[in-house]
Length: 348
Ligand code: AMP
Ligand code: MG
Image (cartoon, rainbow, N blue to C red; front, side, top):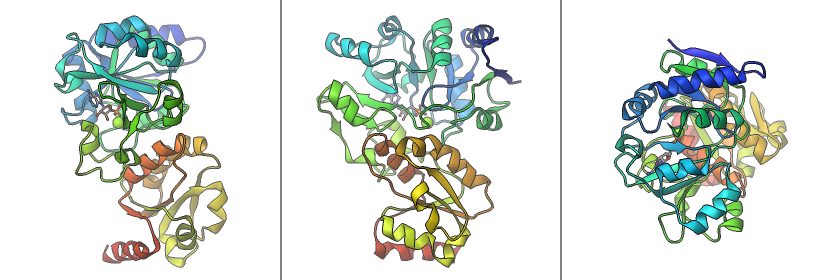
């Protein structure tokens, strides 16, 4: 049985106590962070962590992120040099996850047998109180594997009721895309996953980092830099087509055939859609905030297909485009390839 725990000002302390109790006794709790909902268990309890993999149907070779709420917890789980540690004291809590050499205390199931561990200090009051009360929590995103991440509590209940011990109902999250992952064992540091913390912000504080072209989200299937990259991700069950060229996108959504599609676009481009459209937002933060929510809207819509536009890749836009590309059934970069969309739907 899953306990659904609604949080309000009156019951917050009690609710956190109950959830921390569940974590400490080896259970699983779905909790909000500033990025997406996470599915957590005691990071030092391998049996508890194995429940995460079962609940999510997650392959065992895809490691978890360890969530901390103070720097002492960092020292319990990973090695960090003094210079970086000082910088992180100013940066954390925030959606920047560090890949570091792990300590013995972290069980193999958390790191998927690697000698590294991802550590994150989330900027969300409920998450921090929960971790403070329970100790380090290992957690991936709460969605069932390959599905879009969960950004609201209703979807958390819909997807995970019966699969976990408790779900904290805390409404919509702030950012809507996952944390940025920075490999600090490489020289120079290397971006492993674009996320809510922008590359520009990292570089202004930490210095130049290596950004692999894969950060854009192309070619996920055949290159595996981080174990997570080899799996299909974030995908709606309906076929999503990305048209990166904005003029071609506008032309496509004003065509007759686009009426079979749910159009996902900016506020600005809404007027070109001849069929049903959903506005992701008018700025890139709003678009990030609504992206996974609207992927799920597409699945629940009566439309067979979705078509989505591209966005500029600066700031959080890099993470937005990474997620869109990985979620897309087909990426159309230029005019010549528009025909491929017609071919797919004519063959169906
Ligand atoms: P999720 O929170 O669902 O996005 O999953 C955690 C992400 O962190 C996945 O993409 C993992 O591949 C990545 N990750 C966690 N630990 C490691 C590690 N030790 N090495 C490389 N990637 C990691
Ligand atoms: Mg995930």
